[in-house]
Amino acid sequence: MSIDLADLDFWRRPLKERHEAFARLRQLDRPMFFPEKKIPFLRSGAGFYALVRHADVVEASRNAKVFSSEPAVTNPEPPGWVKHVFGESMVNLDDPRHARLRRIVTRSFSPRMLGNLQNDIDAACTRIVDDVVAKGPGDFVGQVAARLPIHVICDMMGIPPQYRAKVHEHVDVSTAYTGVRPSLLRSVALAGQNMLALLALQRLVIKLGHERQREPAGDLVSLLVNANPDGERLTDKELGSFFALLLVAGNETARNTMAHGIKLLTDHPAQRELLLGDFDAHIGGAIEEMVRHVSPIIQFRRTVTEDYELRGLHLKKGDKVVLFYGSANRDESVFPDPDAFDITRDTKPHVGFGGPGPHFCLGANLARQEMRSMFRELFTRLPEIRTVGEPELLLSNFDNSVRTQRFTSGFTS
Ligand code: HEM
Image (cartoon, rainbow, N blue to C red):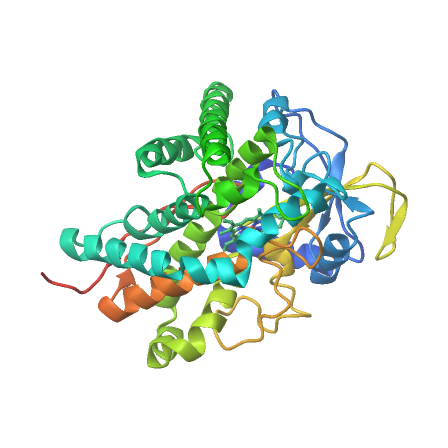
């Protein structure tokens, strides 16, 4: 079986085959180079080196001066409109611009601010499970996993109730284009809708920002648009990009981890029993193991800023490297028996939230908090909940997305 990570057909292969391919790549002495394919409407470069070992992903994440996040972290090079929408977004910037944005928004993710959100998160989980009980189980993604993260982001930002339906609608459209492109015509149509939806979201939050400048409320938008003690605040464009980033980074990731997570617990009854036997003792480990095992984000890219030697490989300025988180998370030299799902393993070094370094996931603790509340509510009220059959997965080389997953709750009303 030949392996070509730049070929979209590779990402259509069954998950098991892809894991086997990455296991073979990890055995190579050096990171392998993959020439890029010509994709209509996307600028293609020479290609990229695939960083598939844990140590290599950690080294590149840590050394952000050499492994730059500019001009963008997606691969292949995104079209111009993506840069327009996400251009001022911290994930695509290096210091000092990255550090400035991160400084302004970090306060909103402090343990105190997250603590204030706990009641809201619990109440949202209760409502979601109330609806499952009332309507009966069907699709876990639509009824459970997709509902919580977007709700939490809107609550956090302080999006007023009258704006929420529009936000949901735009987010649904904007995330429809993360998969492998189905056909040229369809991809152009989807990209157009995607861009318009993201721009509409930005306009909406910028309008809200102006309102909050006139009349601050105790929400995140108010904090971001009014000067902090150091006199710093986000510009309109930066606020728009930040909101779009939160919705893209914090929505699908948490939702997909929950959807894959419930399936993993169904497929591994002994692990499920262990968790339900002492939820508080095991839920922390279970969540980290889900993130490791699933690796919701498949890859992010870096561009090399100066000549550099990585594991015997001579990288030149301008070379691209792609960090394959799922492969690093199954590196057998760090995680014994890496394909096994074991909620008691030491997952400390996993890179599902990114490697150690300045871009480490800003929302990691929020995601943990959401998943802990959701699983607690589900297993307390529906202890027989289990998935049925296989999930319908989205074809993607970027995120491990679940479209639908049938489930049963064992609950008879
Ligand atoms: C299981 C859930 C999640 C996973 C697996 C995940 C994964 C990641 C990864 C791999 C990165 C690193 C990007 C890089 O190194 O270039 C990242 C960054 C980021 N994440 Fe998450 N994420 C999750 C949830 C969230 C949530 C809930 C939010 C916020 C609501 C969020 C906001 C962000 C932001 C703003 C960044 C950019 C940080 C920076 O560039 O400084 N994420 N995430």
